[in-house]
Each structure stands twice: as C-alpha cells, then as structure tokens.
Image 1 (spheres, rainbow, N blue to C red):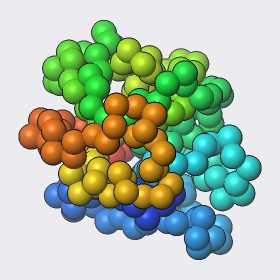
Image 2 (image 1 turned 45 degrees about the vertical axis):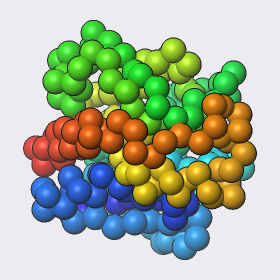
Image 3 (image 1 turned 60 degrees about the horizontal axis):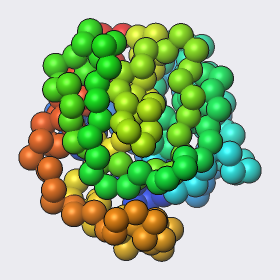
Length: 229
C-alpha cells in the first residue's frame, strides 16, 4: 500500500510532508489528474490520501476535481485516512457537506492561528502552543462540516483546521511549505496578482525555525496515526 498524493499544480508539492512520510518508511506517489487522468483508482487499497493546495477553486467546473471528490467520498466510506491542505481541505469539507465560498479578504503571508479547546486532546494538535504563527495563501474558506471537531481559527478565516472522525483532517493553512516553495509561489503567473491584494510578497524565511518544528510534529503525528489504522 502507498500514500496517494493528489497534486493540483507542479509548484505545490508535498514539501515537509514528504520528510515525515520518508522518515516513517511510507511509500508515496503523486497523482496529477489534471495532467494525466488515471483509470479506476483503487483508493480503498491506499494507505492514505493527501490532497494538496492549488490556485483553482473547488467550485470550478473541472472534471478532474469531480474525480478527486469521488475518490474522497470512497475513502471516507472505506475508512481510508485523508489529509487535505488548503484547497485539499476545502475539497474534504465539500465532500462532508459544507459550502466553500470566497472570503472578504485574502489571507496571504504569515498570520497567527489560535488553537481551540478541542485541539487540546487532538492527536496532532494537542502539544502545539495555543497560538502559532503559520503560513497562509488562500482566498476561499469553508463551513465547518457537521460533526467535525473545530481545531484552529484565525482573525481572517475562522475555520483553519478540523478533524472529522479519527482519520479525516483538513488544514486551511500551509505547514508543509519551505522557503523555496514560498519563493516559487511569489513568481508563479497563477499567483502573481495575489500578493498585491495584501501587504506585498511575504518573506519566505520568516518563522521557518518554528515552522519546521510544527511541520515535523503535525505530519509526524499524522503518519503515526495512519500507521495504526
């Protein structure tokens, strides 16, 4: 079994999630359905599914996004762990019945998130600080899925993280990014208009020491959780 990673653009890779998977000896592979459609994906046989970010919207009429949603629904019904990052979290929330919609103001750069009470007993978030500064790059958000544990919030975007059941996690923020990934986003044609709507391009090196620690903790714990399934 392998971890299947659904990538939406080549410049949004696994980043530090790959470090955690590799250190846990977990096999993984990218699926780029927008570029290379695959046949019947045996998602029920996967060790876990990871859905990365991207500049598109879950509400766009893209056939390959609908295929990803079908994969998520099948994973949920089969008990396969799912981790969604940014766009991936929005896809997961949509499949769990929530609405995804534009925010009043894009959240791009380094902003604090606050952990909620439910995070104290969460396997991934329980040992993090009550407030952490993390990286964001998104202009849409989602409603909290029914029955989900609301784990983290920010001033601009209330729903920053949730867990549904034991194995479904959605993170709106980007703990996976490295300075190199952030730098690449700032020059991508698909993204170039985004920083102009905020305070300008973010500093790729800011907060990276703590970000490495957060990523190692969150994704290491997620790998531990997947391994126990």
